[in-house]
Image (cartoon, rainbow, N blue to C red):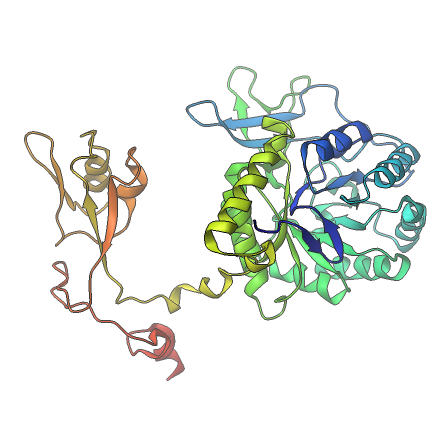
Length: 433
């Protein structure tokens, strides 16, 4: 069987599935239940300094976006960092780590942006025996208004400065958690690398308002008639997270820095996709909050079976395998041609493909009197919309036209070029000339 053991910046764990810094990792009770369920590691909920106390709201802390089947797609939270006393957290961390030596335990930190505050908190956590620290430069609500969280993560100079302090005053591996609430995620990643970070983790939550109550006219969750922006997470943010992970993995300036992938990981497939795009491990929150800690058991068995089927001996063999196939638009092969094909036996004659194509695409699907739907190849541009809206899996597929086959839409024969980057039809090649 494939080996799921993971070593991330020197931190060993029995599998690459960690719980992210969030409500599920706020205390000893939760963390031990997570370990018992099979999680390979946890990032303890963000600790702050012993300055002004952190006070969370006593009303609703979460808002949600659901699919038609009531499946949770996205979660918005307005909860702050831990409101439990620092010394209580540190004592529990020490107790947990001494009991669970084989599991990863990383401490998330967020303190004011001055050297003494970071020096003090790092000194206080040294004897917990934790495996590393994660710098929370991503939280977009509550703490950002106090000059912490994403207020730091949006300024590369601050990231580099604080990271240097952490590496100066701590023996532990340093993971910098990045905010997605920025134009180009590569810039803060570069700053973290310059500061000496051992790794980056991303993405933190996305600044959001998930809904508005149309009776009270206040954002939800609503606290005494008022609402605020919060952090958005869950399956809905996965595409954004995958793109940002890939950008860091393939950028020359950040290539090679270890990445912990976060954002909508719900199944083993999600985890495998993050790892294929360069993540050395993954962190999970919303899935655990939705289904409970035992959801990790499906992730473990699923990833193990997948690696076996692919003939991969370990998770390390999967990490980064998709990165060479991520490119910029101008390098895509414009001579690659596909056409939609409808499986008549699988078709349920709902007409969604026809409506979508006729009204919003290229009028490339014909409907007969008996509601038989066929593709007009001379109009099909292979946009894939029909595949995406069809409710029957694999009913509509895209067929690749073979070399020399006539494209009915353009009247040209399909050509194949071994090196598209130098072909004269490639815009980037023309620019290079």
